[in-house]
Amino acid sequence: MGKKRNEFSHLTLEEKKVVTVAEIVQLLIKAQDEKKDVNLNSLKTRIAAKYGLETSPRLVDIIAAVPMNYRKSLVPKLLAKPIRTASGIAVVAVMCKPHRCPHINMTGNICVYCPGGPDSDFEYSTQSYTGYEPTSMRAIRARYDPYLQTRHRVDQLKQLGHSVDKVEFIVMGGTFMSLPEEYRDYFIRNLHDALSGHKSSSVEEASVYEDVARDTNRGHTVKAVCETFNLAKDAGYKVVAHMMPDLPNVDLERDIEQFIEFFENPNFRADGLKIYPTLVIRGTGLYELWKTGRYKSYPPSVLVDLIANILALVPPWTRVYRVQRDIPMPLVSSGVEHGNLRELALQRMKDLGLKCRDVRTREVGITEIHEKVRPNDVELIRRDYYANGGWETFLSYEDPEQDILIGLLRLRKCSEETTYRPELRGKCSIVRELHVYGSVVPVSGRNVKKFQHQGYGALLMEKAEDIAINEHGSDKIAVISGVGTRNYYRKLGYELEGPYMLKSLKPEFYKSVFDCVDGDVIPKSEGTYSRKSWTLNDDAWLKKYDREHSQ
Image (cartoon, rainbow, N blue to C red):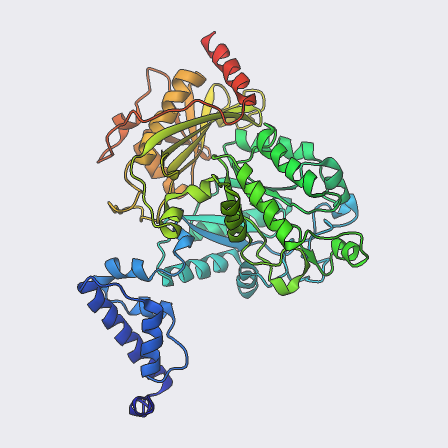
């Protein structure tokens, strides 16, 4: 080895990096041509040692060196963190500027568990964050400029080999709608300049108990949360709730009961869920309670058991986005002690014979990465339930035998009493989400080995229109869509009205999806439809709607 290092000792460090990357790429191309598998990590280590480098070259440098004629076949195999786009979309998290807690004037204080904001020990950070999380550090480097945050993150994803044709923004950093309208317009406009689309709304609920909301200085009631869910869904938004187990005054039994209530009570039933176990962080009111012995976190094993039992309760139409906050462990005085809480909970479920059936666990892209399985017999599955003052229908293409989800659609019959958007008044149904999973396929591309752009979206839209006409009795159907996907809906016969894509369902104007669409779509399939509700309570609501419609 000493001779080899002497052989290349005349090269500078940068020259060694260049020749190392070049040789790695050549060996990868050779393996590709010979249809052989290569362990990239061991290859990088071996070639780096050959040229006397102390560290392996960066993956972004290897991807950048792949010749154009090999990029299509080679880059997907080099993809860094494929889970980031396995759900069919690239997620870009951005942060608004630090601002004071909006309810401090009402309650006299911030939430007892909140570590961030100008009034905290982490005054340079936004609400709920410390400034040491990856997203926080990117925002601070960009001085909270929304355009720079977006461009830097998109460029980073591109360098790692991800397609960024389809992007969803997550706006973090406190109650965005409490900021001045001028700043909100500036922030969203800059995001739009880089990309587009805003279709979901996150609501931090924390608990379903009124006493807990009061004692933790939430600044609002649980009833207000339920009303917010109703208004958001009637406007077509996908609702993602934040729930916090292990809050003060909540024991293990109450925690489990509140999640049962959250999933079964029609006043809650959000489309998505982020589970944030309570963390004790210095500078917070909760830190003082913990320090004086008035608050104690669950032991690690108890918390894993609790999360496992919560995940077992999740209905198949709900997506669990996160299972813990992205706050560095050294800043946590008490609470979560493991950075992989979801994985530990899923393993505990396996030991207990339980199964998690949330959307994320069943996504085809996730199952391909984690379990190396692909769907065989795909069927159309229908689930109906009542939530937040309206009739919800969850349509999905699934492999029921292997419990793999390919695509989903959320359809809602708008409530004529509480719908406030003028575009949705009258007899109207709305598609709140249409999503086909699997690795991202660029907007103009097709890949027969992947599930996007294979016609599942058009089939789901056709079924939604059929339900809207024949069961809801609607005169029109609306879709809340990102700006970049509006042309897709135009091909299906929809037109822009306000922020929505609308289509008339009146007989004299109506054309079905397959009368409008051009190009190939997969043949229509009868599939298997299930009207069985997830809870018995919903059957009464469905019968009520059936009676009203038949009259």
